Length: 132
Image: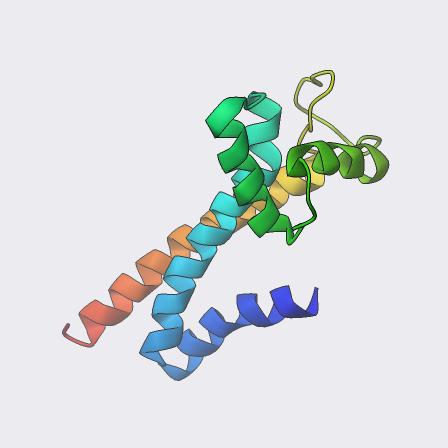
């Protein structure tokens, strides 16, 4: 949590103190974070990857979850999901044998996407104000 807090706070610090590098970081970071959230929650919900797609999904999931153990990352994620999240509030149809995004994470995904979009617009507005 501490690492994520630092990563998430860098962009607001950049905007508060007009540090262009941190503002650019924020524009990139929040879209990357949203993409990772999609890989962790929505790819396993919407599809069961096979072959090359499975290997790519496992690689992206390992990066997103920092789970670099040998074996199938998606299988381990499903076991973790069952233990931690399967009994939480679910508002989308359940799919047997698949990770199902819970309400908490769906709200988080929406907020992450909104943050990414607002950050991009804020950076553009800042650049226009600076005359770039």
